[in-house]
Length: 72
Image (cartoon, rainbow, N blue to C red; front, side, top):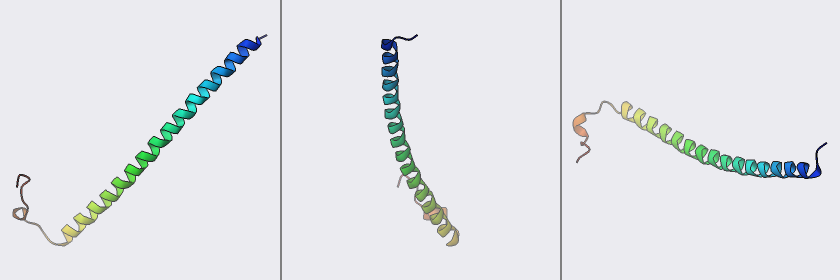
């Protein structure tokens, strides 16, 4: 038969673990929200770049002479 003190300590340990787990879940949710925001931004940027490429390709061929090298 277990002693009331043992049961009380086990209950306290479980409450501490539950509290840490809740904090961890909250932190992970914040990380997920932040990552989703970043993914949404990157998705919009990719769409914009694809549209830009489509417009450039539709405008005809480009000459490399029309573009300045990076050091200019």
